[in-house]
Image (cartoon, rainbow, N blue to C red; front, side, top):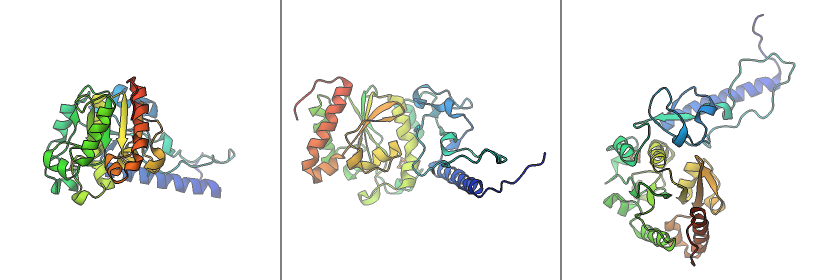
Length: 292
Ligand code: SF4
């Protein structure tokens, strides 16, 4: 029987949309610098960085279980049952998850840092002074993820050492912890010029190293500071004012979005909200409750 061309207008429209989705997904993968492998979704289910087997025998870091926000929707309605089916186009949710192949089947903080090297993978390398990798305990149960280094961090090579960093340190100590017992890092490891926001290509280029750090640490809880860290890890464009204070999940790890300390320096009236968020984190970690 010869192949037939579908003539149903709704089916043709869905085919066109699905083709565009596939093209957009491929372009995203190119920008993100990831390699798409033909693994079935079940092979890369959560927590990928903890449990998924290496793909094609290559070492890898796990990647977010959710598709990027730029990934378009799947076709909304099925084709009529009496129509000859065209070759199946994968829906967005059925597309294989991107898998980045990088050094270390079981990454450690050191192996991820080695892989990072004197990185020139994005344009931020041209203006940085020092790469700001991360600081804290390799056994940390709690990881704070900010957005990008500022001037003080760029000069010192350590995250959160300026005024916002000092406030973060106070927040950590108010929880009964210390900088030595948690881990602190950023979504991008180099300072954007003039402290501008990190751009999508920079976030994409640097993301595998944050993913590697989280895969190495396997924390019990992640706290994202500010909108970029939350939106980058959650693939969610919801404003941070609505994201904060609600538990989310990243690769099976509870994630609490909250405001960035730099925002609190500008809006000290919001400190109470952050403290409320951190109290939820303390409860999740089994830490004793403390007053504000
Ligand atoms: S921001 Fe990240 S990807 Fe870009 S140059 Fe720095 S370390 Fe490399």
